[in-house]
Length: 147
Ligand SMILES: *[C@@H]1O[C@H](CO)[C@@H](O)[C@H](O)[C@H]1NC(C)=O
Ligand SMILES: *[C@@H]1O[C@H](CO)[C@@H](O)[C@H](O)[C@H]1NC(C)=O
Image (cartoon, rainbow, N blue to C red):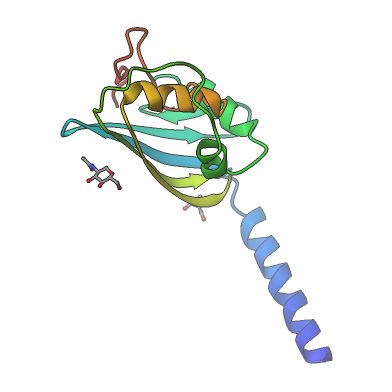
């Protein structure tokens, strides 16, 4: 009994020491977002640091990081349970979304197929993540910022 307690205290102390000796604050969110539509792959990397700093190729990284930080549920739950925020044409032109990486320190892999990019866009808005997949005003994907 005593042995195990001592061992776990020792291990806990070891973990604390290891992290406090590293002055780099790790990114809380680091994801690859990709959409496959009509055989074209659109990809963005989004990294969120503390104090609203962002990195990666995402053109609206700051906004997207702010939206993620305000989620009350996991990213996957937020998107899965969201209702599209507006009306879309019913034309079938599948847009497959994949989000892969770490969100708020948690391993995340989310994939979903949408009828078309309008449903994808409006579902993101319904999930209160309107910047996560960046769109231009005309509804095309915003691949703006390159590395
Ligand atoms: C500090 O932590 C970061 C992120 O986990 C890691 O990439 C880096 O290698 C670490 N640096 C040292 C000196 O341990
Ligand atoms: C999109 O996702 C669906 C369902 O998982 C899959 O059947 C389809 O092959 C995917 N399309 C592409 C282009 O990846």
